Image 1 (cartoon, rainbow, N blue to C red):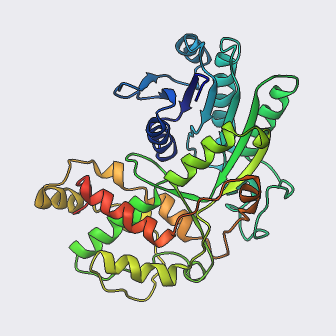
Image 2 (cartoon, one colour):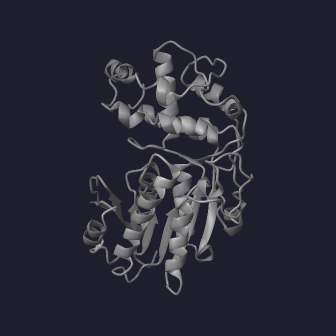
Image 3 (tube, rainbow, N blue to C red):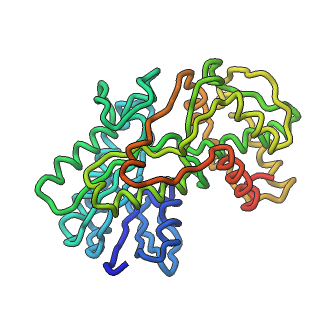
Length: 351
């Protein structure tokens, strides 16, 4: 790569941002700056900055030094209790990031925005599938749409470009993340085994047989960088998914086999409720198996599990636009889950 490229990864400690940094590091072609509230340990190729992006002044002060930034990969997220409450903080963080970086980064080439199927209303109920990037918007509030509109308006007349990346449920390694389905499943299965109960699907009955798809975090990282560095992808949105579909009634027995569990018929229950009293069980598991001392709060994204397992309708999007533009990699979802579970064991997160 003849031209120096400096990536600023916003949301560096999440499952998406963390895997994106790993991919950028592996290429050997990038200088990388990771932004997050907590910061992180620096390496030869990655420098971390702890910054509160909700604080306009803190963002301006901390990011003023990033004059060499050429690419912003925005994957930050703040959770709130309602869809309407999500809008203000999540839009503010993006606005504060761009306001701080664009004036000082004279060589800025691209801003990549991480979105998701919420753009299509997937979180609201049965929606038109397969969803396509050209589908019309739904009734607000929706911060993903507002973020993209901000970038579109800001980009007019500028030399930099943007892209909007829309994955399904993203699976990869990350702790303390509010949206980590693979970890939810691994901990749920591990604790089912410890308690001597079979693995049961806890979601709505219709969700057990509805079509769904996932997005591997590594594949997502590759696609994100591809879209950010391919001129033909300028100012475009792309659905990014593994490329295969499945139903939980077929996937759950394969997951149970991995954890050496029997499968019993589904039983609708809120994981956020039934797992709320299991911290002692988790702590005993950690001690019994000599696991990494990971707090229960860092591995128990039960509310997100309830959210995904509550989709009693198809949740799929058409990924052919990315293929038409030149991105052809795919991942087998069953293998993705098993690889993540093996990684969790190797890291001694689960036994």
